[in-house]
Image (cartoon, rainbow, N blue to C red):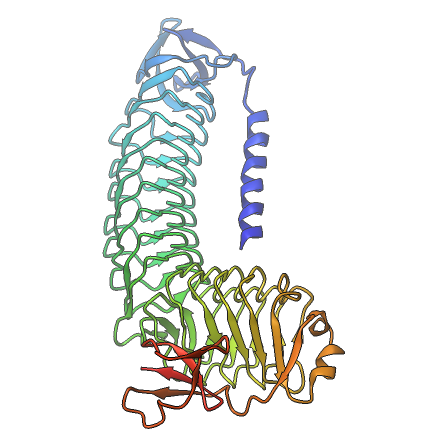
Length: 499
């Protein structure tokens, strides 16, 4: 994901540089009237276009473009503004466009950082790609109902605080309002059926987003990085939520997935660390929300969890990034049905102190517990087959690793990077030499044999359990006198959950 984002950013910068080189710095013009430059488009039809003046910052102040202009005794209709005409005119503060011009072309006002006000005619039909990109002083815009086409990144990096979207547009294109750091609220009208890739990405002051009833699709990264967004209500009829759509929306406290949603992209809610409630509406055939989590119905894969998630029986895998940046849980209980823990599943779960991997789990993906920097103890079941590279990287507080397998799982060089010299690796009696001869397990400097019995099983115990007076140990092997609710302890050689 990080590499993808970096590549996308570099692509944007390269594109901007290439476009900068294409600015028409020496365009010829046919005539000039009142400091506005014109080209004749048709002498017979008496049509002209506004064009670039030939030097940087040609246009300054408030410009009123007339609908008709007199030249050489004739009356010409102004029907067009040439693409890039006002590119980089940082001194331009206002623009009035006549009704004779039906479209705003690509890049027309690109980089007009001083532009504060623009009056669009009520009959305008389209706004081109990057038309107002970088207009950082432009605080508000009303898109008339007559506009049926809005270009990609049309208002990207502009200063708009409020937007009024007309009824003629059916989709918000890719990057339309990306990096609008002053935008505080948005209302998507019912006529909008889709929100494009990165449409509101990194609108860091966005505090309110109302989605219209006609919305069918929210595309990749649509609201990524909108860290102040406190809530979002998905309309009935929504079918798709794209990858990374709400990544980093750390103020979101709850979501409800409608019955109509059939696809949720990878990492759609990564970094939503404020979640306390996740529900899926009844009747959804693709997902269910048992245990305060989003679970794919087809394969019982946990797609996304939160600090209140109780992983239900039947879940077979913990998906990529499922608990990303979920800082609060100290203990996460996984049922015996778990077969796989995928890449980055518990990435940066900084509150996690101990983890017992279920005995039926066969694989742990790369960086699954990366930066769980309070993790002190790990129990690995006998059936584990492979643990990915960096799975416990930067988990420097791990003091004890209990590996129950007599045949060491396959690991990578950096699986336990940083703790090979500090953690104690406990292995089944009679297997120390095997571990010392196994790739990368041999990097551990302190390997101790231990009789585990059946300690990989987790058995619930309660206050009235007749065996609660047996010696109780924490996951670090220390005897405890008092147990805490929800804690995991070792009793009679078995892992137990105190409830």
